[in-house]
Picture 1 (tube, one colour):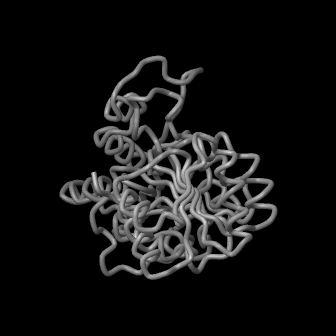
Picture 2 (picture 1 turned 30 degrees about the horizontal axis):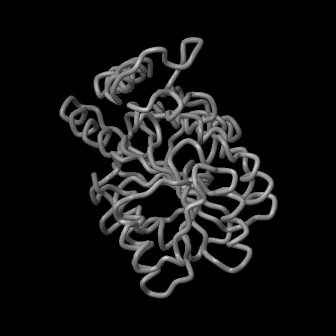
Length: 311
């Protein structure tokens, strides 16, 4: 599936071909698009093996030596295993590395609970100087590659293999602003990120046929510009957040904090992953988990209509 991650890596390879001083450091995790790079530009690719702490430390060292370093790995390990290095090297020293992971959420369920990347936003939000980006489509994946050349702080790029297409064709992508109103409406605001943006946008068109006009906001980059965000949210509109992430510390928590800090009392519901006392004890496909944790299209529609009924 050639989605946003491949668009990002393809653009990075193009920049390397244009003599940009970029080096990809991998934790023994590859991609077909990198095979050509390893042959044509062996000095621009380095594998440190399955050693994520080394992945971050080596990337920081190369960045200090003047390279544009991209630490590339399989989610969730570059965050979970190397959190200490991210904090004490990348953040404290404010080193511009790109930490790039593939497989957020339940994207690779066949490998079990060890590979669920469902806590990463909550963790990375605690890191000062860290820019968190969840690309929505191929256009944003390419833009994130160019952003790597101009940004001066650490960046965490979290790719979902279901994020693809060209939803952002012709749109301005502002990673410091952090969000885009994909559809305007005044009945309810739905805030999401990643591959959910397109699916919820389609749901909103169905709701419109039933007389419900929904505002859809893609919160693709954190931290976001809260002043601009509050300017597009009225004080009485109900808010629904949807994310493939645990409910604690995700975008739903961030929106609640933002509203509270600015004296707004909108009715709100967070949709995400709520564990019942433990990590999942049964195995299944991504669709299985999406249904299990109430994130299906029908569940999102039911939640939105329930919020509207309380208005």
